[in-house]
Image (cartoon, rainbow, N blue to C red; front, side, top):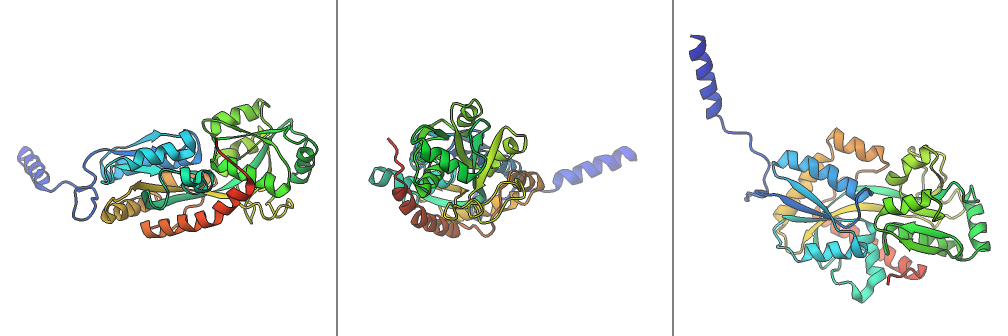
Amino acid sequence: MIRRTLLGAAMALAALPALAQPRAPGTDYPNRPVRVVVALAPGGNADINARLVSTALSQRLGQQFVVENRPSGGGTVAFETVAQTPPDGYTLLVGALGSHTLNVGLYGERLRVHPLTGVDHVTISSHSAIVLVVNNNFPARTLAEFRQQVAANPNRFDYGSSGNGTTGHIAAALMLHLMGVQAQHVPYRGSAAAFQDLLAGRTSFQADTISFVTEPIRTGQVRGLVIATPQRSPMIPDVPTAAEAGLPDFQATTWTPWSTTLGTPMVIRQFLSEQIAEVLKQPEVRDRLIALGNTIPEGMTPDATRAFIAAEIDKWVPIVRASGARVD
């Protein structure tokens, strides 16, 4: 009797339809692995976003979202890579302020894939403030002292970034421009590589995302001089705002856009936007991003994302040109 009962229950369960994973309406997307091309090196904020969200999407949708870093050319190589793929949603692009906005000012007519006309957009997964840090041997503990040191020693001090034209490069160039001082830029292949030379004293300062520098500031590996936002962050409450430090126009926040090949159907982009919004609500994703100092925006539909990027281009391109920052 027990055996017949168990057998009957098993047959009943087998007859039930399997729980279906979400799919784009009217399609079977995704029915194979999705490639996620990150325009920055491993270890930075965009990479962390891409890996957290991709892991959660893989679990939610039952298809692997495979992250691939293409940091060369300040993100231009990643743009060109994605632009050459079929417009079917199986290749995504994850970038930052630098790749999706600053490059317009840096490259001008040489930019082969424009962020507004060369790709389509999906969503934005986070915002992250920019913080200026110095190595512990740098002879300044305030931004005013920093300005005095750099002004007295033109081009003596070096600063690293994750590459030419990246957010850290332009944020630091903007700050120097506003101060009316000069220092030498040293591009690296990623924030982590630049940071190692900062710790070793081979460079003097670095502008990077709060998510990247919070722990080194807390543990005393570097000193935070200023956060380029109107309010202090609870992650690093002792670091003054730009206004408090005497440089109110130094405002810089990066963000993490998700884009895809131009011509990808809206039904797929809208589906991806909604699915990313759902995984950003998961505690293991949301809490991790917030713990790193990110804020998570809401309502970033494909159309809202494109409008946001267009507004950021209008804001930043004149700043890039006024700063004098260039790429070779």
